[in-house]
Amino acid sequence: MLKLRLPTDPRWVNIAEKNIEEILIDHAYCEQKASSTAISLIVNFPEHMDLVEAMSELAMEELSHFQMVIKKLKERGFQLGLKRKDAYVNQLFQFIPKGIDRKKSLVYRLLFAGMIEARSCERFKVLSENINDEDLQKFYFGLMKSEAEHYTLFLKFARKYGEGVIDVEKVWAEFLDFEAEIISKLGTSEHIHG
Image 1 (cartoon, rainbow, N blue to C red):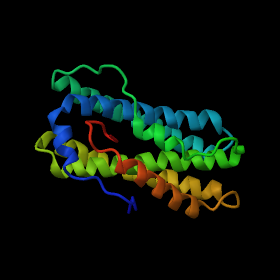
Image 2: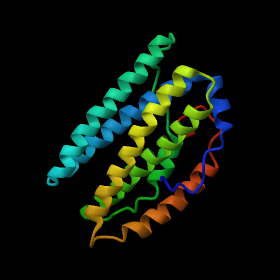
Image 3: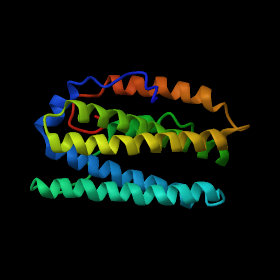
Image 4: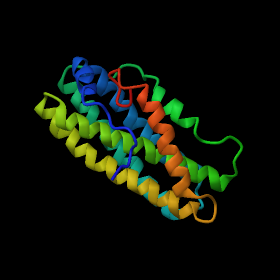
């Protein structure tokens, strides 16, 4: 369903398990950024009411996920800590062309958000199937389903607003290749996308 070109090596979970605190902190900030992305799309593209409504709901859902991760941190006696840099997201952003018009910018931003949700979904699946912590297995299994829905939501909007603007399927295929290159150099740190 996700069509990611390069799956996560399940051994990444061994790295994540060695520092659950770091993975949870990084995850919390991923959820916060996802909520911020939805709000940014509302602010920058208010003329698309269906997008505004969907992103409003998504922002609240992502913030509720942030709260769920905060609860997991507290249960384990951890603090949120400082925001971490996300090398994956920063590199992924390089795919978006500079100086494009507003319509294309919307489509690229939707594809960008969809890609992050796809990889998050895939990582949550890997965690739910391989982590030796029953509580976190269930936790990540539940979140995996939400991420899959978010991924399809962003792609749906990209296809809708990309019609007659860009060849969305071609750009998505190129983006998948680009993402595979990035992820091939990661998977060695206790970050959701690292």
